[in-house]
Image (cartoon, rainbow, N blue to C red):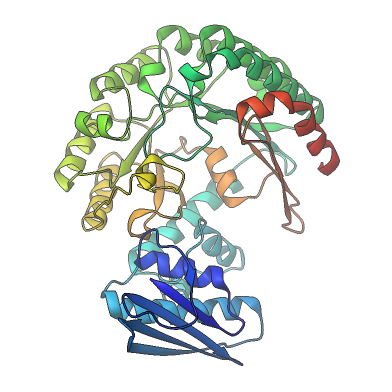
Length: 474
């Protein structure tokens, strides 16, 4: 699809709304409709916005939208509405999240809840103003209520903070992934230096938080358990000593790859106070695991999960991805059947998101979204059967069908860090390559971000600069 834009219109909103209908399209601006293919022509005159859709240089449809008020949000809504309406008519597809393209839809429901709106009023607003379908409006409201209950019930002081620590190494790089992941075998010679630099930054955060309550600690990546035992111990002892891990309400370590989990690492995590871990099979279909670049089997996952239980971990999260290459609804049922047998306290259901920097995107693999709705419905039914309630949600660009990622948990097992990172109600200090510190002013709602370099070698060389960045902004 090509685009023609005339007048003062937000290009980003045009593109993101169009991407809801046409997965991974670019934003190619031209001056006149081409002879072949689709072209969306957007025009603005005053408060009037017109969308015209061309196919093979022939205008096949048009839609007029009106800007209600002279503010940016009204312009954005009218722009999205025009794109949404004309592409809904063309594709015969009604996106489940309507006009919403951001990653945090629950923030809308939470804001309305704080203003005193009832569940029914919130859902009505989501459905009529944002064109969200009924099931998503209900889900959004349910999660906002759950998070309010969890956060209101928290006994932590208002100035509590969380800590995120980045370990960017993985045993292999999944074909859909574009996070700061670096193959562990190729970066072995840098691991000791990386942990040395990371220790320096963690020590600084310890000084910074000397008079604060560190509520949540989250060591993620990447795959933290991809570290060798020597560096893993160095990391855990530093966190324990400088971040008062024993006093944290929640301490999570991502042990995402089953093939990196050993009894020794589980014992270390228990010894140094981790209260929650995540073991992520993504699917229990071995053919798919091979296809997406994972080096473990479903049997290894089940063995690792039971090892973690035997070592004393009660709060073990499981991540699954729906929409993986060539997986059918029956494949998803088989995975969910296997998960139910484990009876987890926490499970996160992701919709596949193919990022631009990933191997899947570069190889131009095409994935069907025809069964995504049924897959999500099936996952919700299975979570209900385990008495797991949805407690946090986010969405990603380039996700199949513009669907959502939902975290489910038993009562008392919801991950508070996940809620804080999504709702942005708490300052999160971050250390390590690719980590982003979020400085939240609770009174004004203002958020400042401090970015660390993504490449671990550059991070090692410039860790002092990363620390100075924080000193200047904190």
